[in-house]
Image (cartoon, rainbow, N blue to C red; front, side, top):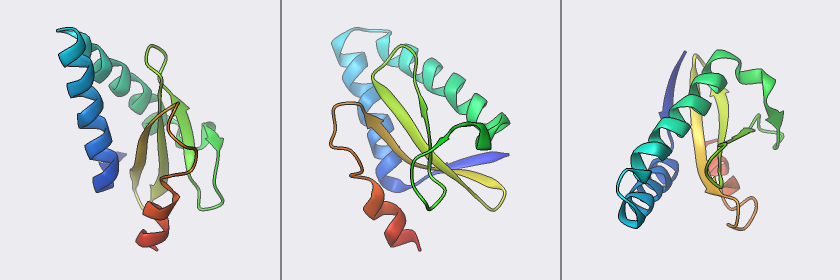
Length: 101
């Protein structure tokens, strides 16, 4: 299975990498590694993760960082709808999926 990002989700991911790399060299790379580990788990067993929205959105948390990946299966791909920090307001990303149809 392949994956793709909604534009807002990709921007969140890249912003988080920059934030951590600016904070401490190498920490951005550690976030990438952790993200890729969680993404691999989601790609291998997408329906194993907690359903958080009736549109099929599921959530998988990152172990080392206060982020979660919100995703859904669309066709033969995993669509990443948000890479959300735990302290952001819950559900802010719902408008992204409503705009997708």
